[in-house]
Image (cartoon, rainbow, N blue to C red):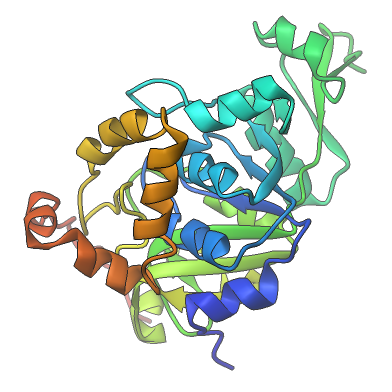
Length: 300
């Protein structure tokens, strides 16, 4: 049975007020379109978990969607602070939990494996142990140095953007691989957004590229350009100009409201958003083809 849904319907059905939402993706393939749709639908009291919150969580906090953030690095990558999230934390308006990157991914691995926690080696981040009671030390049962334990993270919803998927939700991605697989396997529901929806034969022709199997996917949505201003390897480049511009926009509540009114509430979907960006931006973000070599899987 096809799992293909419009993004608006997938968010309406499967993201509920009060959920823990994990928007996956590291550097590229960040699911901005899904975040914007959550804002448009007025979802509330969400716990937003993500290794690197990026601008999408700044925007979702600004829109009043979140009551808590769980993260392992918080910033506007390459620019500076996530001003809105940081200010909300400092005012006491937003609960927060912080982990190391390794700690965050270990939490997802535990959740994906159905374990209550997983141990990891000690890190230099001893201050995190002091301020986060979820990070605990435990003795190595084999006599080595003490270990760090972190609890499993099982999001209600994981949102993963990738380059291509089929109608059954078998999803493939390439380029920098982040925590997409771990987040998807740890979550109770999984929403995929994809640059392309392809025939199952395309997926089967290169099975090792399938990081997300359809058996764990709740819905798959065809959403080209879904991760702008992030990028999708092989499809379009990172919009560094926007990351710089957001640093200025986010300093002013009025400018943030104008941005959300124009670019989130003021468009009905990602297609309209991309069209609104205009041909100059489209041209600036174009990438040249760089094909990998084909692989011979053989035939029996």
